[in-house]
Picture 1 (tube, rainbow, N blue to C red):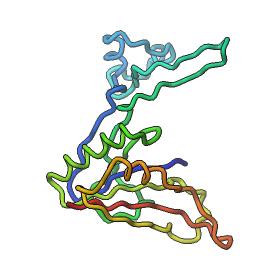
Picture 2 (cartoon, rainbow, N blue to C red; picture 1 turned 180 degrees about the vertical axis):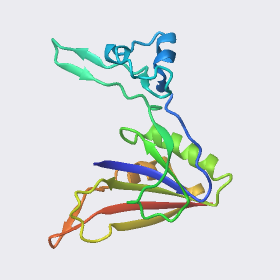
Picture 3 (cartoon, rainbow, N blue to C red; picture 1 turned 120 degrees about the vertical axis):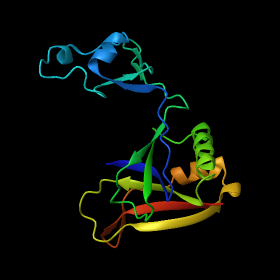
Picture 4 (cartoon, rainbow, N blue to C red; picture 1 turned 30 degrees about the horizontal axis):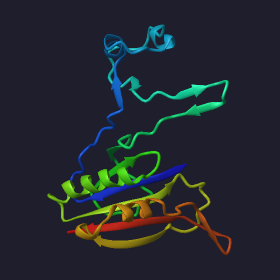
Length: 189
């Protein structure tokens, strides 16, 4: 269970890869000098040329056991946008969906997302920005409540995106009825 920020459109949404992560086959990783877990090297049934087997990241955790520090740096460009086959829980009727994957929304990330939306709107009439909680506990008695807002692209700001992405999407209980919440921001030209 986690929150989901997603885009929905009637035009295909471009993939925006995370610049800090890359997938390799085992052999590609070894050729690139990336350390591969011994368990993978000893697995004789593993196809070493199978793509997307080893995940590499240039983000190194900061660990100082003596001081009790464990920090994982989170650079502003540490996010990606990738297509979703379907999101049954989203209440969108648009044909194309894409997940915005990040740890949290920050103003620099919101600015990059706004730039992405601007580029997408060059070929699309509208795009929906969704924020929801995924993976309910199965006790929902009714479809989620959807709060919808509308903005024009020219009036959309970084602050709007940050506020939207900070919306409370956790399950709500009204009179002992479990109802989920979804937020949809329709952005039009």
